[in-house]
Length: 349
Image (cartoon, rainbow, N blue to C red; front, side):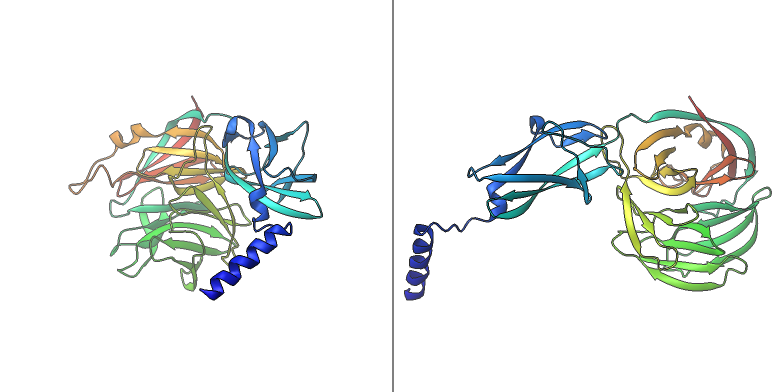
């Protein structure tokens, strides 16, 4: 009781002498036009500081992702490089001190995705025991990663005949996921085990394992010749350093109306990520720098051209697997346990 009385007396004396127990960050708020929290890339947004205690503000600077935003007529332009969930930070210099406050917003794509279709160029045989999770060409040879516990594998395939030229099986308790090839190495993911594998491209000898960082799961994998791209079942596609396998950043996949979290198997071509939509017969075309979903390809007609096995499940044996052939400049697509691999040309509708 004596201690409580002494503390109360101290606080009363402190406040009477002009002190304040208020957190400085609670003195101000970031105010945006219309109290909105969702905007489009490059949109101009009115912004002000709500000064709750009429402090003397000397200067305010705003930033997103560590990049300062220019202020023009109490407006900022959201010409930021990456989209999705963002935080506006304001550094406020007032009196003889400063404070940083923040506000969470969403920055979406300026444009709606364009609609694409396809034409079939060739059909090739595909193993009905290949639950396809990753697909990629190296030169003229197809490499494939398959899933399901007890039948997950890494395969080298003659795409014209469907013959498996080389195969390594994963442990029965591992669910294989996406794969990609870079600098003479094959990188392969597992789903829930939070572990990836590195193999020598020539002989499939395992070189090393690696652990995931912040990413939740292992889904798709691709590369742009310098870094790896990894999807994990969320809205994020992560950038991995191919030497250290450290996650060094990410983009978020967004349309003009929402943040989207269904990117599965990945393929990188000329600055774009082509991503299978999880459990759907579609492929997204994503800007690899901003995360904007620029196009959607509807491959719904392909399932009519395959022969369904006796154990077929419409909710499981879906389209998955997209690979670009750099010489032919065509795409190859298939599905989980499908009996066909399709060579297609993607066309704007």
